[in-house]
Image (cartoon, rainbow, N blue to C red):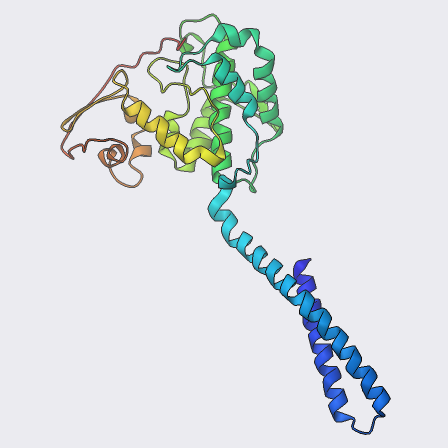
Length: 292
């Protein structure tokens, strides 16, 4: 619409210029007629002088938005989906150590189900920024994992559930999803290896569940935080310059951590020490006991 206004102004300018040419080329007109035409030109010129700056400013604003929005994404806190409901739940039932009060969540189950229902009714589309999609699916994975445990609680391990990652229990839009779909077909294909420290498998050896939902506007900082936190947790990893005892997450998803270079290069981005390229690597046993 604003571009249509600009086109109108250009036509108006052209029309005024034409009027001026008519005045100059008709010296035989009466002075009264000339005065009328001159007066009309002056009025149009005043209108143009007022409108053109506004149109130019608005046009520049539009150009700025077109250029900037794909770059800044949700950094303006314009969240496509509000995860506040999940944050409230996490703050209430997740400890600072990442232990989950499944009994408490089970008593407050309606709030978790309501959040999952809202997720299912507002699935990402092509208009969403990558950060919005990542935050949505990370939170979805964690919420559905909690839901899976609640549906089978009490249990001692997620592995006590038959095919826990393959059960299609949740309908988002017109499709039924399982945890495996979200992790392997959606999140891992978004080329962000730090997601492995954000999604939680309800076990002691997995990264701890944060007591705040991930949001698009803070996603990069949150992903860096959970990555550093996981790497520096001596129960999950023991890291020195020449020897590494790593979580099996780095073995299972080795390809994800070597997208741009080596595993060592990836690790060195988030550590205070510099690991040698020749460091020896071993992987720790994974503790699947429930994280409560």
